Image 1 (cartoon, rainbow, N blue to C red):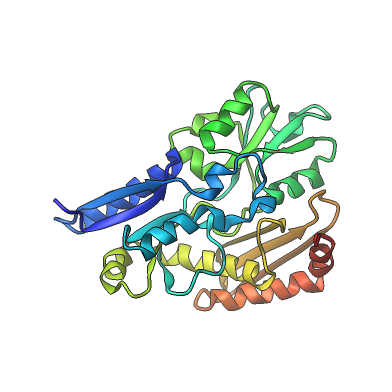
Image 2: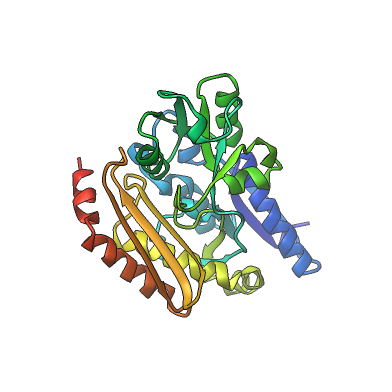
Length: 307
């Protein structure tokens, strides 16, 4: 029987979990609907030795999935929102963002309980310049080294002793039943998350009204508003993987509270902003926070990162 919908997904265990999660929710919402997965390898999955900043950025994880939708081989794609570029190609839309998981970063180690307990010069692995900068600011004696690969690959590198500790998104560990690997969680004050961290986004062609209608009930309004605010900061500052930028929004007394940081990779220069605004206009809040960051030195930090 031909499926009614096909979801394009990366082949990693976490990406497949995310796609299966959306498949199950769609089939539960729409009895009789059949959803299949189309797993595929992306350029980001293949370039394991380069950092995202040097390899070409977050779009490496989504281009092949978008091509499958454009070719008619898939109807929608499920992404980790932190992997989605702030500008989508013409003709594509984010149809829904589902309820967010735990957005914090997680400290994972075989022998140590926290970053503070690591000995001087201990090697910490992370794929993120944002994490690198914030860890370096608080723990300048540590060595921070690139760590690429899917979640299982990163854990395997830790377990064989390549690193004293690694820092990962808590959401991925929890979704795969690996919460027991988390030794401690970093507060958002210690490590401000990436824009969209722990939220899932569903992308499709804007012209596919029937797909948009099927997906619409999966949207979580609160998550969507928070992630739009975070992505607006990123967009306003031209954020990409070469920019250590964190942005995190949550419900506040006046609608949304949005915190953001731009940092030099060594953690020695930081521009921070913390603002509140109505949830009805999250992108305006994001733009305002980006302007505060500019006023506090973000442009100088970003210019210093230019090759």
